[in-house]
Length: 350
Image (tube, rainbow, N blue to C red; front, side, top):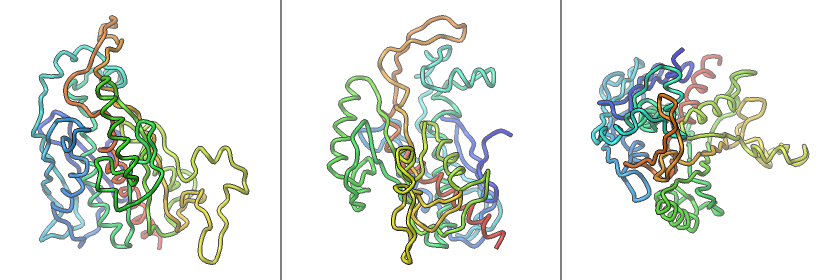
C-alpha cells in the first residue's frame, strides 16, 4: 500500500510534487450524470490559491484545473475522473542551499529515512502544494453531497491565540482568514504581521461543520464515521490533532453534562458532534483540527546535514506565516471526500 489513495467506494488518488511540472487527482467511483465543469472546481481552488493576500506566500499559481477524463457533455460518466493542475511559478533554485540539510519540522529527515532519497525542492510530495489536488477532488465530492443538500462549512476558529467569539457567517468570505468574527479577523491580521516581522510562524484551529448529514452514515468498529473523519483531516500535513464535538473537553465533563438529551424535535445539545457509536445521528457534524505553526521560518535553527554533522539553518524564500487560512478549504475537502464515500457505501446496503 502506497498511502496515496483515500476512500473505499469514492476513491481519490493524488499525485505530483511541489516543484514538478504538475499535480493532480484521479477519482474513481463517482456516480454518473452529475453536472460537473472546470468552473465548479476552480471556484474551490481559488480559496486555497497562494499569493492572494499579504498574509500568505508570494508564490503565485493560477491553479486552473483541466479535466482529462470522466466527464462528457458536462456530466460525469461514472468512469475515472482525472484532474491536472499545472505548476506555473516554480523557483527551485531557492532550495539548492538546503539540498544536504534537514530542515527542522519538515519531512526531510523522515523521507530520507524511508526512501533513501528526497525531492528537496519545496518539500516535494510532502509539500502543502499537494493539497490543491485534494481541494479539486473535494469539489467533485460536493456534487455527490448536493444530491442530499448536504453543506460543509469550514472556518478559522483560532489563529495565533486569537479566537473567534461570535459567528456571523456572512463575514466568512469577507476576510482573508475565513473567520466568522470580524473583530477576531482584524486581530488575527495584526498578529500575523507582528510574528512575520519576528521571522516566526503561527498555528491555530480550524473547525468544519456539516449541515444536512442524514443519520446512519458510518460503519461499526473500525470504520466508524468519526474515526475515518479523524484520519482524513489528520492526513493533512500541518494537522497535529483532531477532535469531534466536545472533543478533549469531554474528558472534564460528567456523563450528565456530556450526554445529549433526545427530544421529539431532535437532540437538545450536540456534545457528540453529530456522531454516536461511530454512526451519524442526523445532527450537525462538528470537527476541529489543531494546525501546527509553519516550520519554514527565518529564525536560525539547529539541525544536521545528511552526514549527521551539526548545522544551523534559516529558511528564506516564499512561505506562509501560518497554514491558516489556506488549510481551511483543504479541511473542508477532506470532510467532503469522507462523506461522499460513506454516502455511497450506505447506498450499497440499502
